[in-house]
Image 1: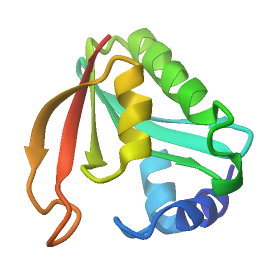
Image 2: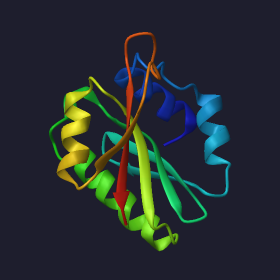
Image 3: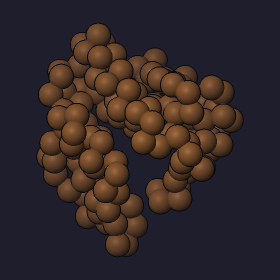
Image 4: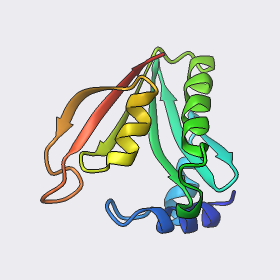
Length: 132
């Protein structure tokens, strides 16, 4: 997927937080510790720095949700992060995004904290942690 493809799919999946544009994706993809995983109508962008992995964003086309793509991408993220020597992983998810929270919690992620109003005046972020 090109940065333009990533931005187009991201725009279909997110309004809050705002979707990332192609330049933002290109900049992240140029970072030596970032990696992109793609599977069908979905992608996951992440990075590993020192011994920590960060899941930056996960997007699955709305018409392909509940097809197992998110589960497969997050499992591949954990395996790739381990190969890159990460010991633990983190992500932020909107506290009101029940579908995403269910996906992550079912795969062993645990709530590690909260960022008040991270996604705007009424939406907190939950910080999730996964031991690798």
